Image 1 (tube, helix red, strand yellow):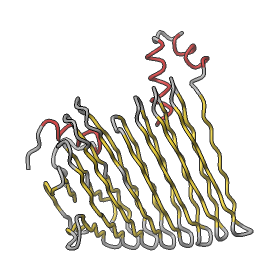
Image 2: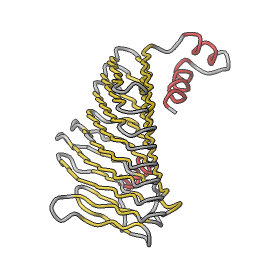
Image 3: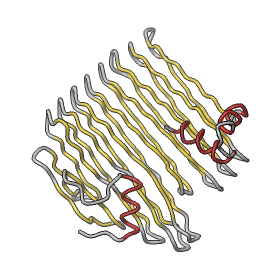
Length: 307
C-alpha cells in the first residue's frame, strides 16, 4: 500500500492525494492495480474481457467521491485502459481521475484512457481530470484520453480537464449525447511549452428537448508549442449550446481554433466564439507598478487566465 516519493508527487499533482483515500478509490500504477477500496454505494469491478474497470454508483447516492488516478514511472511503458461509469438515477457524486507520468529514460511513455459515462435520470456528476508530466530524460510523455458521455433525462455533468505541464503530446476526444432536460458543462485549461502539441476535439449532440451544453476552453501556448481546438455542437431539438475558445500565445506559440455549431431545429439556440491574442501590455505595466517584475507579472496573468 506504500508509494515511492515520485509516485506520491504524481498523485498529489493529478488528484490532490497525499495518502490513501478514505472513500472509494482505484489507484493504477505502471499498468497494474496498486490498491482499491469500495463503499456501500460505490462498487469498482475489474473488467474480464479487457484492461479496465466498471465504476457502479447506486441510485440516489449523495455526497460521495471516487478517486481513480493513474500514474506511470517507467520509461517506454504504454498503458491502455477502458473505464465505464454507471451513475444511478438521482445520484450526486464527484469523480476525480487524472494521469501523471514521470519519465527519466529515453523511450516514450504513454497512457490512453477510454472513459464511458452513463449518467442516469436526474443524476448529477462532477468529473475532474488532470494531466501532468515530469522527468529529466529524453523520453516523451504522451496522454491520449477519449471520453464518451450519455446523459439521460434531467441528468447533469460538469467536466473539468486540465493539462498542467510537462505533457509532450496529447490528443483529447470527447463525444457527448444529451437527452431531454440534460445539461453538460465542459471547462478545459491547457498549458503547453517547448515543442509540445495538444489537440482537443469536442462533439456534442443535443437531441433532447431543452437540453443544453457549454464548452469552454482556456489555453496558453508558449515557446514553439502548438495547440488545436475543435468543437462541434449539434442542436437537433429545442435546446441551447455555447462553445468558446480563449487562448493566449507567447513567444512563437501557435493556436488553431475551430468552434462550430449546427442548428438542425428551428428552436435551437447556439453560440460560438473564439479569441486568440497576446498578453496586453497595459496588464503587465499595471502589475509592475505594484512592485512585480515582468516575469512575475506575466505569471500572475497566466495563472489567473487558466482558473
